[in-house]
Image 1 (cartoon, helix red, strand yellow):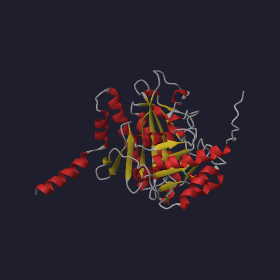
Image 2: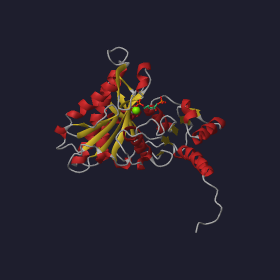
Image 3: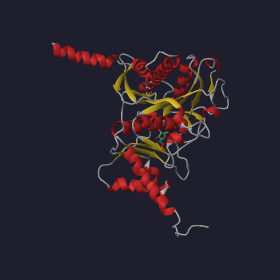
Image 4: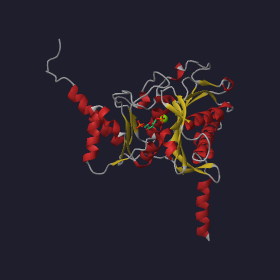
Length: 354
Ligand code: AHM
Ligand code: MG
């Protein structure tokens, strides 16, 4: 009986740790900013629940699958779920009083919410549906978000004040819509994962202080682009093909591929290609938020030349190459980059120029 009580008590304790409670515990204060962070995370989580609800019925409801017929700022065809999920974030944050500006993959310009500006000191940057080509085939997709503090009292309509390196993010995370819906976040105090319990409508703590293993078996890249990559990335792929212990895993949705690496270790890479030298992924609402999480989970993220979190953005929709994951696996990719760079350097004659 005592044992039964103990085990019930354990699972009840676990079920009682909701996302809202966890954020409050993390911020450890009742100050205004702490309450804002807590409210922000709850609003993002609510957006995730709305999107998850539609995704689970995508094959049954009107206007959930297929394309809208429009192109987004990146020139990519917009899917109906991209548009729906983008509108969900707008609607959820419109009446929040928290966020004065929204930046989304699906909107060319910054979306201003003037009524929130007197008190809303934050900007939310997001990719509403990442990997949206997976929607029509019922595979995993995600939403990625990044929170930045507004710089200065006045709102800069041009968005120039947002163009600072990823170190300036205050919080970041993602929602993974898979067999279950998972919410992963960090406010700079470790990375924590929650699973949506549909019967409660709550995200319940699943893993606290997640650490990326220093090395893992997974390598995740679109090898269809191999011929378009720089030689050093081909060197890396040849290496994993010729050594035991590696598994290729690529779902076409960054959130899912990153989540696997967060939990099991390995490396995700989307290098520049001949067609797109800066790669495909967007710095401010894809690469930088995931780099923030990787740094908090003892992992690493780089463009190949510099740490993702050090990159100075030149525009809100800027793209960057991304190599992210376990420290040792990212370092292995970097070692091939270094090797090729050394080969390309002119051989020194040993004579100093006078
Ligand atoms: P999206 O946000 O428009 O869906 O694009 C980003 C996605 C990532 O989730 C994924 O890693 C990558 O694009 C896949 O691209 P590709 O089809 O070139 O491999
Ligand atoms: Mg995306």
